[in-house]
Image (cartoon, rainbow, N blue to C red; front, side):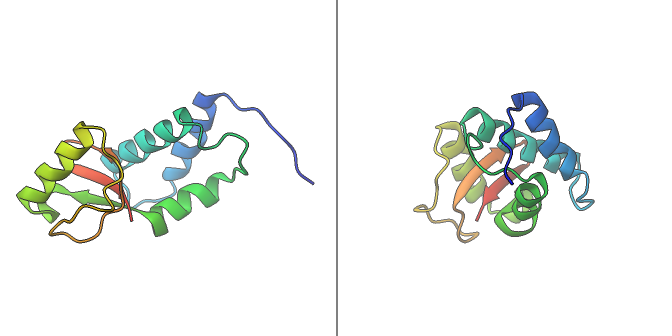
Length: 118
């Protein structure tokens, strides 16, 4: 049996962010990047009319789909290039080349770290 539910966007964001607390490997800055990503996803309508399972979404993002890259893991050139692309609104960087290797999508960016989707 399926049930359709309408949820306020702030409540939806809180549900996703609350699940991040399960992942003790994430620090507060990592959680903030994921929160930015989920807020962008909600604002972009990603969850509209979709099946929604908080654990499935967050757990798969943390384990399978996303990575937090720290500035010191990247060459200076890669970090500057990613920051420039992000600032210009370019999120899909799958066709770009980086010394680091393949990066598919820039989800969120902080001072010294980047949340990317593989």
